[in-house]
Length: 344
Image 1 (cartoon, rainbow, N blue to C red):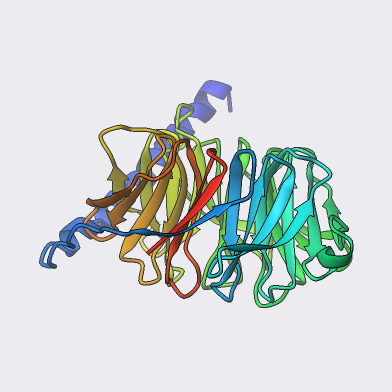
Image 2: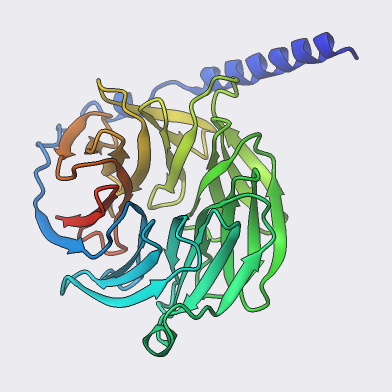
């Protein structure tokens, strides 16, 4: 088969798949929820302002206790916060200031970071009192930067990472060894999310695609996105609370809600500015979608109807991350203005 024939066959198969999807799509989420009352405008207030970083905040992640969170900044530090008391409880100096991601472990005993040094580093939170910066484990093997890391529930024994080398990995944290490698994206993988089903995770990448992977066999089970060469980068992904769908935040200013059961997008969220989206998070019920943006705002969408119902306009620079704790009591935003704000 020649290259031209291969490309033609590929286009035919993609068109056939899309036709089958369209045939099954008798409605979308907005149509199915038309009879529901419109949500009132969402007005939330800043309850806490966490100041301590002196450079861009790149990532935040809540602990399972919904009280503590960890933040990563290009000032070269991880900070662990008591969000209720508005206090720093740990300062962890990093060997590389070019950090891109952080994560809190399910037990709350460990935090992790990763960045342009191509490794994910695990820290014991209690050890930081005696020896700040001492690591418990280093996960090395990626040939590109670490863009995202997440511990795999229910304990601290395994971690999933995504990388600029176009792959994701499942790690054994105790030994520092790779259990599985997930290859299939054609660009830098920017984010991973683990949902209600601990056997799968979703990844978003600069090839404009989101892929659902099975941790048990290391294979891609579903792929979402246009697949076009000019598709916008997917900067973040987040599972819906029930694990049956996930949202993506893209560079073209759009967010998609993809349903695993219908194998397609069931809602699109956009604003008139089309500013690149950086991050995404759901409220505990899933009715609200929080989307961090490059234009200093965090937009709040009605997940069902697709309408914007509020704006958080409290930062002076790019909103790089947004996160909702397990109990749904608040939403936290981190920004390149070096500040973390908590709203409810």
